[in-house]
Image (cartoon, rainbow, N blue to C red; front, side):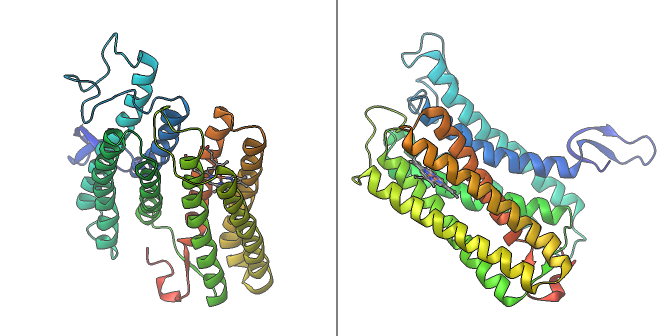
Length: 317
Ligand code: HEM
């Protein structure tokens, strides 16, 4: 097991310092936490706990954590505080990741890229903390809530790329047609997610009854969101067929396999989207849709980020 994380002493054989965790664990945890921040953020909204901690950076006046007999109620306070705790966990794990990269991966050809990705996780934490503060102080303004989600898109992508590069996963050589269609699929996925946050911002699940809403009819924006999803699924199917028809067996298996996973997750997510829409947006299904949105994005970046049109980058992780 390779060493990483918090120090617990020295290896008796080598005399070198031993660490508690193995590297792939640390970077997987970071990716998991970035996703968990989105899902627990949704739980805050869906349980109406958006102002469970009414102040920021403290939870309630004079205390960083919830206090007994808080006016907002213990459940709401702890749900929102849990979301804040995940952000702090990201900070700690991102520091450990940066220390690991700095100490262990200096010899890697792509060290600078890996270090930049690790730093992005810390910078992202700072930005999320500030945005979280703005969200609370503007009493859950939908623009701040949407921006909070939008910021998670590059942060999740960077955490996934960081993990792949630390594990030295090789890139896959794809044709320029496959890359072009992949790019459009990526752009469309980002658009679907961003429009999704506008659907949420115009809908009933604000996080607090007094929170502002976008001045858009929820039905209209839901239709735009769903139409974009139909286009996304059709294009992804096209991408998969192009790969099957024109790429080598290696690309079909590795890249095409990941595109297929993305297609299946998107189909399932689309079904959940329609179910929640036609059943009046029950909290539990909306929560599943939020988890699904995170998985859609992870699976999209998972194929897109390994494709390259230059064979030089093959194996040069
Ligand atoms: C690939 C498929 C899809 C993705 C990636 C996706 C993504 C998202 C995202 C990111 C949100 C915002 C969540 C938030 O801000 O908390 C959202 C909300 C929403 N989506 Fe989708 N969506 C998909 C398919 C669909 C479909 C087909 C429908 C059908 C109408 C739909 C209906 C909705 C509705 C009604 C909301 C608002 C839920 C709320 O009130 O919080 N989605 N979606």
